[in-house]
Amino acid sequence: MNDKAIPSRGGQSRPGGSPQRMRRIDRFPATAYIASMAFRDILTLPDKRLRQVSDPVKKIDAGVRKLVEDMFETMYDAPGIGLAAIQVGAPKRIITLDLAKKEEPRKPQVFINPEILWTSEEKATHEEGCLSIPEFYDDVERPAQVKVKYLDLEGKPQEVLANGLLATCLQHEIDHLNGVLFIDHLSRLKRDRVLKKFSKAAKRAAVQIED
Ligand code: K1U
Ligand code: ZN
Figure 1 (tube, protein in one colour):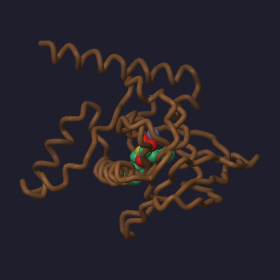
Figure 2 (cartoon, protein in one colour):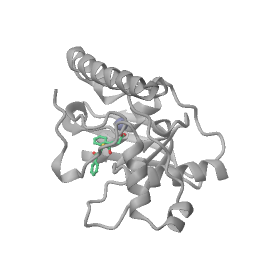
Figure 3 (cartoon, helix red, strand yellow):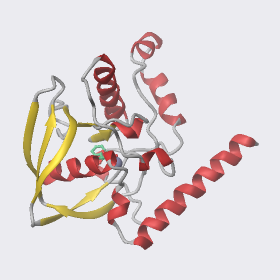
Figure 4 (tube, protein in one colour):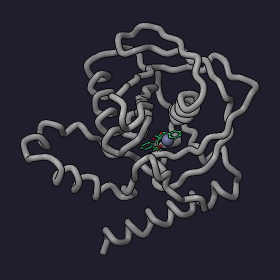
């Protein structure tokens, strides 16, 4: 199984959830921790909610804005470069992204109700990872360019013609909104091996909780 981490991308080490919480407490003074309690737990395989089709956002209200804020905190903390709302258990068609390099200033982007309008015939292969499938990475072939329409946080319609990492991430995250995971683009053999590994780990964790 290709479960190597991408070295330049920093690590994710949180299949069970608890180490992340400990890290937060260690990193911030107690008051700051209370003030920044906007992190949400990231669902991991084999959680069935990851297979849910998310609902369109009808109104961009305070609840949606708070969810977006929490998604950014969760994504930056993970760390990740993208997140779909369903990954924090909210079945809404919302994506957060930040593709800025480590040394660059943050460049947060929000996509509400994104829809793919066009995909290129040309394909591109990129290595993908997923915060819901920790420490597993593999190459995925997808259309090299996509045109996506979406609403920004002000509810204004926008369109983007994406290529490179943005095209990959948008397709990966829009897949999440439709209950599709990047392992679904791999061979059945690879997908089944990943699913089996995570199901076994979840069963072992459940037994440990019982003991
Ligand atoms: O949707 C997700 O689970 C987030 C995922 C997005 C993604 C990454 C690569 C290709 C397609 C989609 C991640 O962010 S995985 C973690 C990752 O790639 C990363 C983490 C820290 C720094 C840089 C990258
Ligand atoms: Zn993902």
